[in-house]
Length: 116
Length: 114
Image (cartoon, rainbow over all chains, first blue to last red; front, top):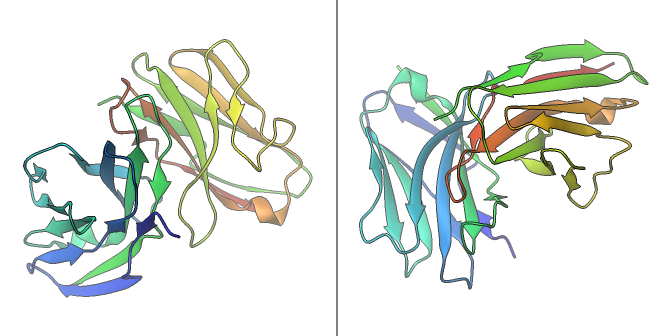
């Protein structure tokens, strides 16, 4: 079974609208972390936001927020007021266990295109 | 977060040749990693670059094909040896500045083999 599932291969969104990118995960470990990365067409991988399994509040970083629903095992990325520069691939990733486990499990990614 | 410089940013190589990719960090970091991203795919971890010792390779990757060096806490190289068209990918280095911190990535090396 897939440990990280991103069900949207591609999305088109109008500029200035909010965007929600879906990510569901599967783990039996009570301690885990969830990450979102952005990869523009140029290829670099940019860290956006992190949510720990024990965090009480949803993570936020500027226009990015994480809608963390632990019971549903979902960690959706919300981008407010989308911009043309948000067009990119977005990857959800998970790290299971304690901090000493560096292994990231990656989703297949969602290609987001912002329309002017 | 650390500034990570990766060189070259892209290259086109002939099959059978080798290419060395460099990753330089502006601060000492505990963990450095090398990833491969094949076209249209997600990331796959090649190995963990260990300072002063042999890299730790993931299943499916071997030292003869992907030799890695890490002479100090700020620098690492990945060599892609005896390249074939199947090696055409983006290769990325990443660092974890402290245990448990998010990994940060270099800009990647886009490699095409003819």
